Length: 224
Ligand code: SAH
Picture (cartoon, rainbow, N blue to C red):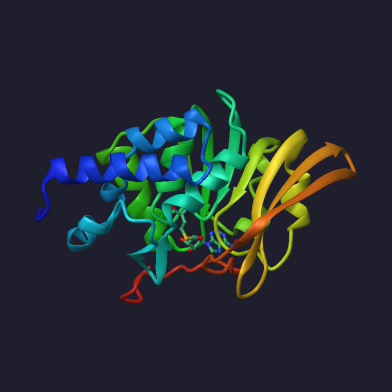
């Protein structure tokens, strides 16, 4: 390790103040950002001194850990209640899933890349022992019909459209937070008002890695 734990703790406190200034007022979100240490989700320790900057950082497999403000913003839009059953599309580093777990949710998270799925599941369950997260290797466009319905659904990659299969897996009064668009994405919150009625709200532009079809079965060396 090349950066002291005290420096990281100070940087984390500054980030939480900044998130509050940016309009993150849900105490549950701010407390989760205090409890969950973002640097531990970044494999390359060289990047640790940037872990509490508001920037996405590489996590391998051509993917990034999302910006803190994006994670905080999506978490706040979800209006998490204790024991909410939450489906996350795009496990990536596992940071968003850990934040939701710290907020009291029961998390089901799906990743399409086998290497990230294995690495993150092992880090969060074995090394960090974070509770209440179940990991699935699969295609997020399909959701998890066997575990549905969900109180909340969060998509953490840029979706080309709002997948109908995910809407079907929401409870009545359930909420889905999903960035929709090709190059940049509009953050949308969809509330399922009745079996066939939805409320649709928009919260500005964000930028995500794309939500892609099909699963990736090989790691970077081409080995299953
Ligand atoms: N929530 C993550 C964000 C990672 S970036 C975090 O906190 O770090 C988005 C992730 O979505 C990537 O890991 C990418 O591989 C994954 N992804 C993209 N399309 C997907 C799909 N159709 N199903 C599941 N995961 C998908």
